[in-house]
Image (cartoon, rainbow, N blue to C red; front, side):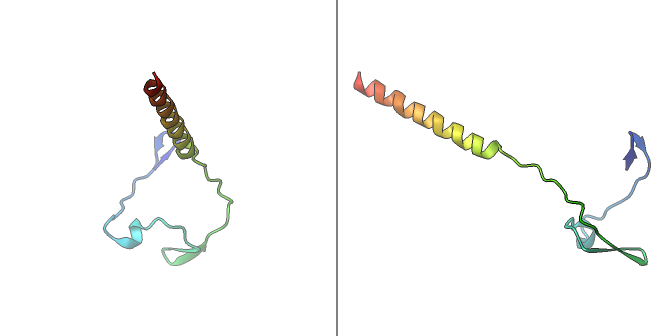
Length: 75
C-alpha cells in the first residue's frame, strides 16, 4: 500500500481461498473480533460509450461500402 508515492505497508492475499478473493461489497465486514458495518457513499460509476459509438461507425462503414459497390455495378 502506498501513501503519496511512499510505501506504507505490504500485505499478502491468498487467491486460492474464496473468502479472500471475493471482491463483492458486503453489508458487514468482520475485522479481527469486531464487525464493521458499511455505509453508502453514493459511488459514481463511469459510463462507457465506446461500444455504441463503435457500432454506429461500423454501420456507417458498411453503408459506405454498400453504396460504393452499387456505384461500381452501375458503371
